[in-house]
Image (cartoon, rainbow, N blue to C red):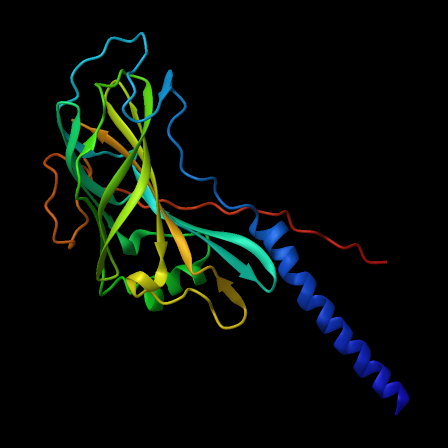
Length: 273
C-alpha cells in the first residue's frame, strides 16, 4: 500500500512539473518571439514634431491631391497572452487593406481605411479559428473601417524624406460598433507618396468584442492594439476585397494576405543506450 501511494505521489509530481515546464518550453523555444512591431521604412533624413518646419535639403513640392492605399500597406492586431503563467504576444496581420486620403494645401481633409477581417492571420491556426469565429465573427462583420473626422494640419509642406508625428481623431467601425478614437500617427514623405504608421488602442468591451481568453488555459489582456502601416500613393491603389461592398480603385490589383512567421526549432534526437 505504501509503495502504491509513493507511485501515486510521484506520478502527481511529474504531472505538476510537466504542466509548469511545458508552457515555458512552448512559449520560449517552440513558438519563439512575436513579429516586430510595424515601422516606417528606414529612409528618413529629417525628424520633426507636429507643426514644425521641415529642414531637409531636398526640395519640397506640393502634396495636395488624393492618395490611395498601396501594396506596401499592412494592418493587424497585437495583444498580450498568458499561457499557464507564461507571457507571450499574439500578432495577426493582413495586406488586404484599402482606402484613400485627401490632402488640400498642407492639411489632410479626409481619410478612410478599410480592412478585410477574415484575411487577418497569425501563426497559430487555433488562434485564427477563435478570431474568425466567437471573437470577431468575421462572417457577420467582414470589415473594419477607420474614418478621420477632423482635419490634420501638417504645419508646412513636408520635404521628401521628412518624418513627423501628428494627432488624429476618427471613427473606428469594428465588430458592428462605431466609436471615436484619438491616436498618434507618424508620417514620412517619400518620392512617390507618403508612409503613415499608427497604433490605435482598442478596449475589447467597448466594441462588444468577446474577451479572447480560452477557458483557464489562455488568458489575454482586456485591450489590444490595432497596428496600421499604409503606403499612400497617387498611383494605383489596392482593390477592395471581393464582396466587401466597397468600391474598387480603378486599376488596383487584389491585395494579398500576410502570413505571420513562427520560429522553427530543430527536432531533438535523444540517443538510446
